[in-house]
Length: 349
Image (cartoon, rainbow, N blue to C red; front, side, top):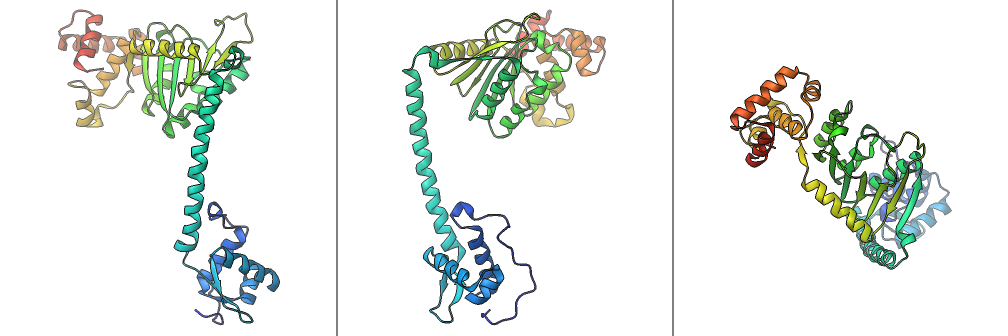
């Protein structure tokens, strides 16, 4: 369409619109000019200036900048008809240049992080451990730890609340959604607390890997195997302000990682409750047991009493015992300990 054609009956986006090309170094006004030129095909500078709400001098300066940036072409004065260059060439070239700059910046950041970690390793002990006091401060640190985690979160969870409950840990779902791996070990007494099994099932359904043990030695959270938070004093009703340590890259952190790995290795996997109507794939995943039976076995292996299992499953204690007895008969076991061992051996849990 030439510069004298009738204007199309459409709304032209203004500079206040979304800066969708900002990452390519294209300003809002330049983007509006590009969109306008692409719609018309070509325009005289006077018409383009009117479309953008600029004076002719301001439009002339804008076109000069866009010509220099390789976004448009303009014929010589006095007519100066302006046309947009193909966006895949003009804007695409700028995006590729910015991408190269980002790649270089990312490499520089990696070197800076490594230099920072090396500096930490050679620092004094005071630089490696930070003391945090109070529930609110500990809660904020746990939130920050998860929001900044890039690959993995490790947790040892004990009964009783220090800074936050599992239901309050909304950061976990966000981290799981962006691909952070969660491995969590729960103390049996914690699983018996009201609503805890529901909370664990929501987390495992979202991707958390959970295990249960009889007793967790210490509360612990570790992000990316480089920063840990660990309470320093036991839970005591008389202590109103708990205290925790933030532990950075050090031999102490390596010891805490070894502790987690040891506790994790001895834990019983906890599986989310699934419908038996999940299909053949769900059944084949764990051998000749249904997903409901698999879930039941994980709770039995975790050491939960029949009453707690019945309450969670919405059935009677008698039904729980009947189902456990049927599984014991199928596995040719006389005791629940044998059932747990056989279930692990057969791949049922």
